[in-house]
Amino acid sequence: MNAQGMELSALLTAADQAGAYFADLRDREDLVEAGNALHYAVVPVDLRGCESGGTALAQIAEALRFPDWFGGNWDALADCVNDLSWWPSEGYVLVLEHASDWRTHDRESFDTALEIFGEASVRWAEDRVPFWTFFPVPARELDDIGE
Image 1 (tube, rainbow, N blue to C red):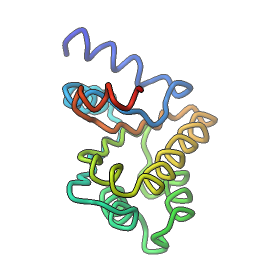
Image 2 (cartoon, one colour):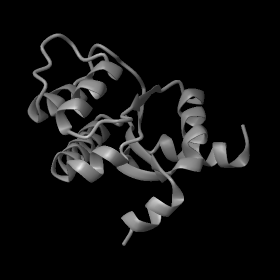
Image 3 (cartoon, one colour):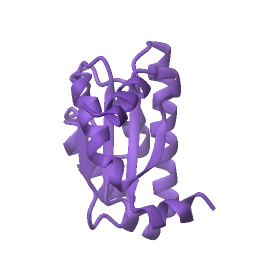
C-alpha cells in the first residue's frame, strides 16, 4: 500500500470523522483499497442512469442487500443504514458512483439521501464503527460542488 493508501486507512478508522462526502473520482480506487485493507464492508453502488430517488433507492437496497422488510422509502433507508445487522462489519465504506444524473434531476431526494447517510455516520460513531459514504465525482464537478 502506498503512502496515500496508508493515510486513507488511518482516516477511515476515525469513526468520529466519518460522514457523507464528495470525493475526487481519481481517489476512488484508493478509497476502495484502503477500506478493503481494513476488512471493512466496501460497497460500490452504481447509480449510472438513476434520475430519481426511487431508482436510486432500489440500486442502494440491492447493493447493500437490504432485507425483505425494506419499504423502499427514505424512512426505510434510514432504518436500514442504521441497522445493517445482516451485514456486520468493523466499518463501512459506501461508494455511490455515477450519482451526477440523480443529483441533477432530483436534487431534493439526493439531498435527503445525503442527509440520511450523514446522520447514519453519526449514529454509527456512537458505537465506534466508521460509516463512510463517498460520492466520487470528476474534479471539475468537485470544484462546482464547493461553490
